[in-house]
Image 1: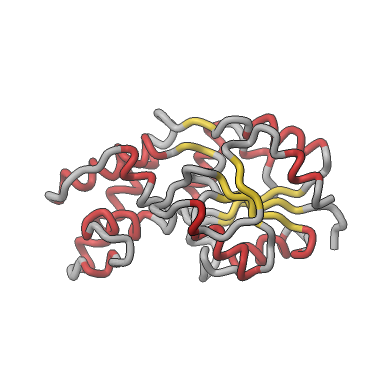
Image 2: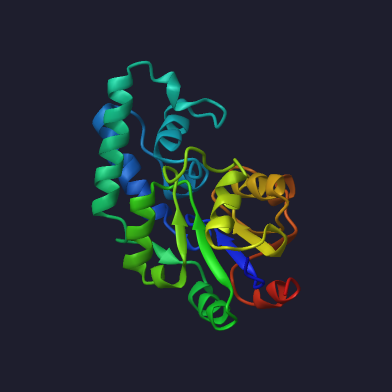
Length: 227
């Protein structure tokens, strides 16, 4: 087991502002299947549990209603496939790094901090996005929605990656932007640094966190407390 710090990152809304490209993919599918389109800001509230959940929450207009409400399994699968195909071809048209991300990753690498990504994006999309936006090589492991048989908010999504990185849960941090990240971290007993204005419908006051940040500028001061 390594003795250095391990940091796990969410992807959408944490490392990268992906909402503009997600909106285009979402609206492509919605138009095709006869459902209303959404704005970028509305999309930010829907992201977090994978493509199927996002489409379902959009269709039914309430976060608690599942994509399973679409009764025709064939249509459901076709919608998700169309979304993934369109998004995969347009994954970094307008997406940008969150302010300070690149600088922090360089700093953390120089401090020999182990870093991994835990996202509810499909693994191949996550890897492709990280590569194309230029930060993939900072991470030792990327775990997506379909990497294991479970995903956030299940804490095993985090603890399994820590184990793969030969890390220690007691010397780990999670950085995320939503209750999905926060609940996984809390149940794994890992401190979480929460970004304001995340991809969630909830206010930050409603989401569990140990630290609250606007972006990655100055985050080093928080991380140093855990060395």
